[in-house]
Length: 129
Ligand SMILES: [Zn+2]
Ligand SMILES: [Zn+2]
Image 1 (tube, helix red, strand yellow):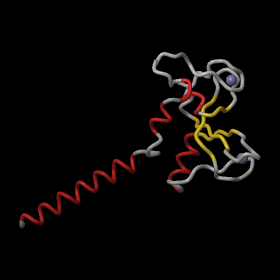
Image 2 (cartoon, rainbow, N blue to C red):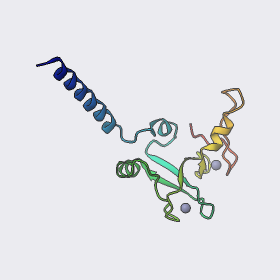
Image 3 (spheres, rainbow, N blue to C red):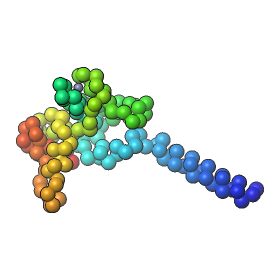
Image 4 (cartoon, rainbow, N blue to C red):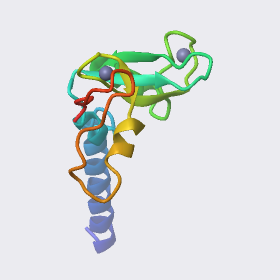
């Protein structure tokens, strides 16, 4: 076996390892986001259509199956059927689906301990994280 063959075999093994890791991850790039939610069995989405703007919920099983078939897409809104949806959070107090940006805005301003984000619907701490 020549040295080149060994190197080629090594590269092939490395590629297989990377592929295996990618395949084993159910939803690449969304792990961190999922970890922040109170309910690990569901994902929450907000329709960004200005005429709809409704929230909807997908189980992790549904989301996983969707992302497997459409890795670069976002789930279609069940109300208006548009695919202009963004990841959202669910308020622990009023159970409304609220934008994640509410939380991001609340965490800005220097201090990490500026208190929990307040739900834009009910004004109580959203409890999402
Ligand atoms: Zn919609
Ligand atoms: Zn609320």
